[in-house]
Image (cartoon, rainbow, N blue to C red; front, top):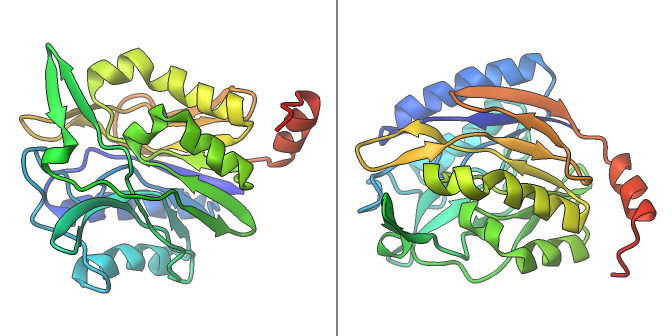
Length: 258
């Protein structure tokens, strides 16, 4: 499966974000990617103190804008999240569409981020309500386990997906710079190695506003823990072909008695 991974510096204005995403999807299409993985809060990035005013509602204007990315480029859109309105609350929801615009299902972020570091104090609970269940989607007979950013730190969620047939674990993210430098590569490699899955993590990068700066380094890691793609700094797209036969090879070579 040839996939594209898109790294952004999303801002509050969804129109600016969509314009950049579309430019990267053109490049991905030229390289024959069949699916594009987007980062966390790709649609509109707030300052973390209050929700974006551009909340997604089922079949509303913003929902249709996201769906249109798949149909316009005949490419699946996987894992990228956006702030969505749900029963008077706001959730951080990952949207997934196949190339025909069929809704593959959504996932609401279960584990909300909080940190209290000297250089950074944030709590997503001020903005979001946590989701309550894990979610997998299936694309071309490949099961994909969905997480969002801070979910990466909870290995039991990844194990649930692996035990239910996932071949890809995806973690769209807006990792802060200090936590990214400390843990991003290590955690993604760990989730890949312990579950013998591909891990795809499209990330936000750069200065989004006065309060939010993110680490970047969108990664694709293979089931052996080898980093196949690292987008480093900057807004860009990377395209890579996932060879799922590698999963069977590694799972038969290193038996995990699961």
